[in-house]
Length: 172
Image 1: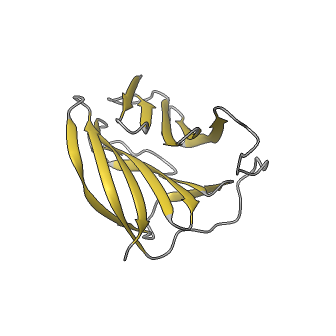
Image 2 (image 1 turned 30 degrees about the vertical axis):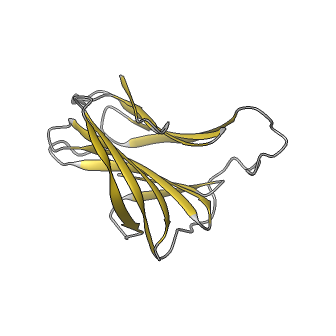
C-alpha cells in the first residue's frame, strides 16, 4: 500500500501496482477546512466490487457540523452544469504536475455510481477486468458553489498512473 498526498490535503491510499488474484483496496480523501471525507473501496480476488464505505471526520468544534446522521446510500442526484477551477496531480513516481486550470462536467459513464450522504458520490467499476484501464472518482458537492473531485487512474497493466484532485466552482 502507498499513500499519496497533494499539498491541499487531498490524498489516496492504494496499491500502486495491482496483482492478479489479489484483493484491491482503495481509499480516497477529500478535505475542506476541518472536515475530511474518505471513501473506501474494496475489490475481491476475482476483481468484483465487494465493499464501499465513507468516513466523515471533523476536527475542532463539532457544534457546526453540517452533515447528516444518515449512514445508508441515498437517492441518486448529481451536480449539473459545467464547473471550473484548479487541478492538481501526483504521479506514481511522486512527481507533481503544477496547479492548472481545469473544467469538469457530469457525464454518464459505464461506471457504477454510489450515492452517499453529505453529497458524496463514488464512481467506480463494478468489476476490475485484467488488461483494462479504469478509474475511481469521488465527487463531493460541498455546497451549490463548491465541488471537489479526486480520481485514481489505473492503466491497462494495473499500474497507478496518477491521482488528480479538482477544486471547482460553477462556470461563469
